Image 1 (cartoon, rainbow, N blue to C red):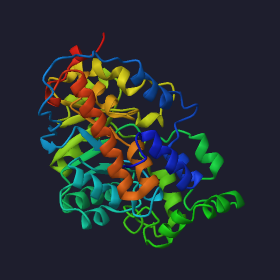
Image 2 (image 1 turned 90 degrees about the vertical axis):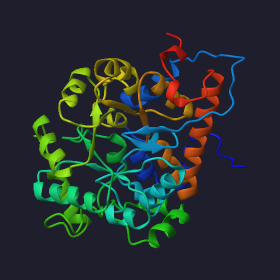
Image 3 (image 1 turned 90 degrees about the horizontal axis):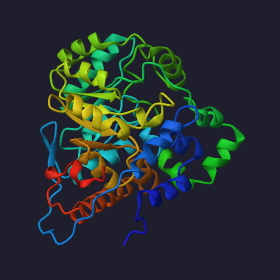
Length: 378
């Protein structure tokens, strides 16, 4: 039996195995990190109604997200630099998700490329798009995702400018990383991680390097990315992106019901209620605290998903009870990846599935598709 009984167990092991600058990159929030903390803490305020003497046999967690069958309503969220938590991290996480029957979403800012992930998976995965000033590069990214048979495009709306994350600055996180004496020592005491990185050729942002004009290595990549996130991105851009893509479209980063209303007019298939894991607007509300009002506003017209602060199967169920049709985990699978590679990602999914299934039963339900607000204390 695995000693990893909770997501926090995986987090503790990942902290020991992953160099500090990369662990902190995944585990940090913007500015004071108040929104990052609220994402987790606000889940704890929600309480279930315990029900007894009900038939708990033949339970099922199977449902759909944007029409795709999933073994449980949990997808792996797009996370940047995943391949720095563990060598070939995006490829390993995608394989684990595929075997588990849940969606994997590859970030534009991944270490492994679209083509890398497609080479080791059989089922279509999802691709997350950042819109850059270089529109030819964006067109090319969309076309590469189509060529790889990605089944959904996840357009991130809340990173037109990059918020400051104090841990990254203090750790000297950059591309390439600053090889200060403290960072060199920090890597040296983690030989398993170092050997993994030495054993792979994937140590840069392979969706970008070699594809964007003038970006041939990590040094030229930094100059390019510093000026490429497009602050002029607006609702009118969603139309040309949707037309270029031509498939299922998910809009990520909705935190306000007025923006949710705007999103329904774009023709998108789903929205993700998200504050970027607390990494952007510090002082914004938690995702779970605004989920219900957004579902009430637009849930009858567009599929509503939720991301941010999920650390357990209980958290997943709380989001579903408040109206989400799907949820996303970022840090939990990154902790698993850092702790034990592909097996760690699988373990993170197993933990969440077991907690979700048992909590569903103890609340008196057998089918994840029948959950609702009546299961919560109001």
